[in-house]
Image (cartoon, rainbow, N blue to C red):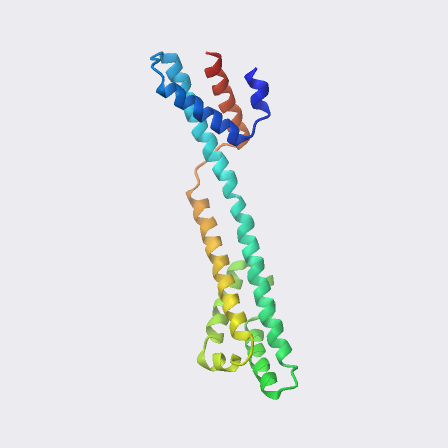
Length: 196
């Protein structure tokens, strides 16, 4: 009876049910060796299943990394297009500011977002350093560019942080069995315990 029930349960439910069974048996006064062995086997499987489930969830970090990269690319595009639009303002002062800043962007690349992320990161770092030079900061004064530059720097840092976080979790990972396989062995261990 338990097998049809478990075949439709979610992984978190299997982990929860198994954990409850383990705790009940640990708190009981039974000293039966077979029961102890079955409980130990179930606990081992629950731990493996929890690790596999956590590993599966960590893969969701990849989506976060790429959405942060997209935000970084969009902030770069906004900065680029606003500086380009300044070049065409009727106010000569604003047009000169836009031209100077856009020339800096052109030196570093107007399509940085098409580069592999390591190369893009290096070029953006160089761009940020040049744009942060006091002469260029004063050139951007009186425009919306300083705010856009800060937003671009922040989104770049957010991308780098999420990339580093994902890399760290990848390097710490253990060799974990497939969630489905581990869930199956956990169900077998739980069924053996219940049938005993």
